[in-house]
Length: 266
Image 1 (spheres, rainbow, N blue to C red):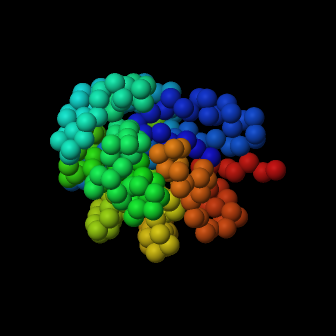
Image 2: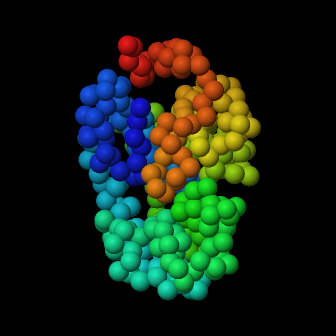
């Protein structure tokens, strides 16, 4: 198993220690935000040397930017017709960063907005109510949306280089989501040095999973799976729930062939 936090390796040491208690083979990992031709992408670095200071520097840089943008997020959110107070956000934030999910939690639990038109899809029974907090984030705080604030992420090429220099494998996370409507770009990413693809993800339907599984096999990429579990932010997702259809013996064989991570035998 692996925990791949966004732009942070702080969970790795603790998670590795806990995994050892249960005889689970733990893989060092990190999910890094980056850009390619103006598109925000998430690249997973599996097997990295997480103790390298370069990962701490990356985290600090993005954290600093996120804090600087948080006030703007508050302003843009209130322009939609809401009245969120900074004090409310500070109760949810541990580091001064205000996320789209935090705004969703506040608004969806505010009696004043129970009938607000913008929030209806995220209320119980609504079309976006399966994972209301993160869906609100995707709909209002990502590229091109009303409350988007730009963060300068490293380039895809720079992230590939960072992962490779630290002994890791670069895997594209949930491509069906970030490359939606632009699947043809995937081949360009392979040419740029992509080594793996997260074919199985809670973001993918069966058709999307089959597509990227086949692409992975066609190009001899490492095929991975991930739940993208985020606790209360994604209540419909459980840890380990990926929809993976590949037999475990095939997974073991693939990993051994690549000399990467051996599954611990009972």
